[in-house]
Amino acid sequence: TDVYAWHTDDDKVVAVLNFAGFLESGAQPVFDEKVVYGIHVDNDGDNVPEHNVWFRFGKNGAGEWGVQAEGIPGGMPKVAGPINKTFDAGLGLRVWAGLRDDPFFFDLDGFKTTLMTGAVAFNKDNDTFSGKNVVSIVVEMSTDAVVGAGSTFRLWASTRAP
Image 1: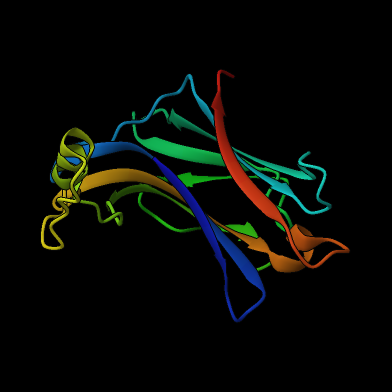
Image 2: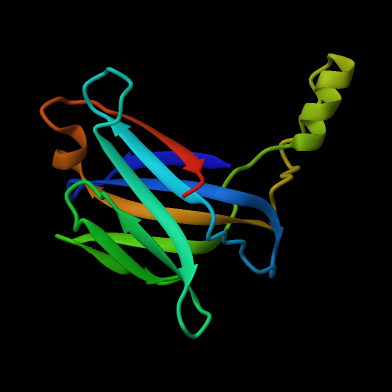
């Protein structure tokens, strides 16, 4: 549904990849062992990633969901941990995955009415995503490792079959 990133005061880049939106509050999150989620970082302007961070979901022997991450810039090569718990990715970096309130604010009804009528019909008090959840993957990465020798970077997300 969304991907976004920001930098912190302690030299980290935090990236969030959201998917499986419009889940009703209280609904169970949706995980798929057959999908690999990727966050890609290009730091030299050629639109080819220098870093690919891959995430996979799976169940342990007790049937509990967890997430595995590999390729975190500045972190350990591969880490894994439980859903809805922050876990260590090495060198002060962390990973978290689970269900969250959808942070996106948007008046979908107003948007549709605007498209049908041609007249702006947005209502600032109507949030279509209010009370809806989304599954999120959150990863902290080392700013130095993300940026490399440059000063800027591009970040995007993808999904694929394993």
